[in-house]
Length: 155
Image (cartoon, rainbow, N blue to C red; front, side, top):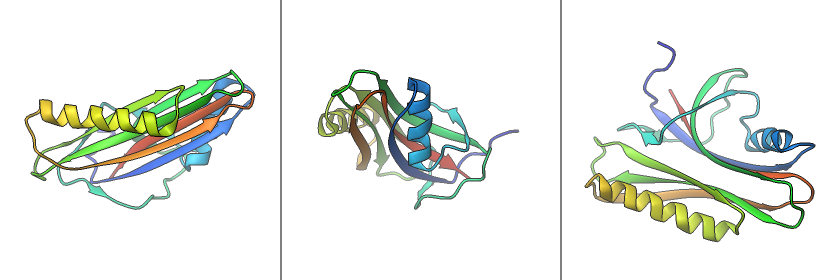
């Protein structure tokens, strides 16, 4: 078994300019502090009892389960943003829900949208919301830019 059910999670975000869109994305990962890991994109569930913690220094090369939003753009002057939101249920024995969203828009617009997505997702599961937490980041593209926001799941 490669993965165990995560017991901790934390938020990261970053932006970067790069030589190509992939280089900009890689720089945003480095800026977020997770650039030397192997991201394994997950569907968007926080397991029951999975604690929110401060950022953890992850081992280089680690396989890291993650839910993320990213955007890369090669149009100078455009504002781009990425955001994630977690809706935590009142009943801690139930899973939380992560939503991700990115767009060529200001951070406040993207954050408001992803928050509503998380709220609607937990409502669809017929769970009462304890709280919703978000992280969002924006940048204005100089040449080729990227924005990245994520929830990292860890054991």
